[in-house]
Length: 162
Image 1 (cartoon, one colour):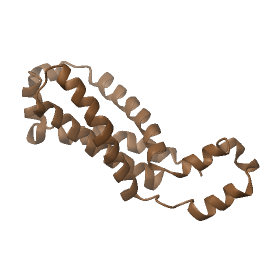
Image 2 (cartoon, helix red, strand yellow):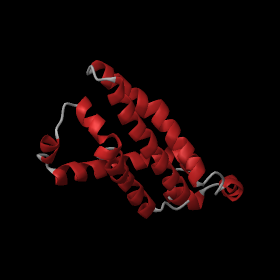
Image 3 (cartoon, helix red, strand yellow):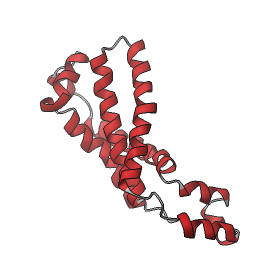
Image 4 (cartoon, one colour):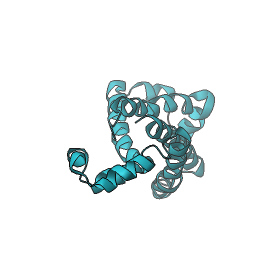
């Protein structure tokens, strides 16, 4: 099982593209700014190179985890010790990969696992932080919705193309 690193690099961009749309003032940006007591002027003062750069680095970290959650064949590769040991794998590994090597390697399947990750991991994390920070449910749902959509798209890309 070869890893398509270009697909992972492209999946990492999804956080930026989705965020550009999701947090646009014409979508949820105005509500998000109000819930955070931010103004357009305050948002313009940030170091955008640092913000976008670290966002992309963090997104690449997410792609590594999503690859393991969406591509089930990773477990079979892990059982033989990873790529360096593929040549010395037992015949049962080759038989498994022949039967299931591309099973469930679709955008739809990856999107399902990405959505589940958003619903059962990102949403609770954001919810817990929001509750302790005394944020509104609007704040929690805006961020959780963003991450559910973003992880859905990232999971689909990774599963279908990585």
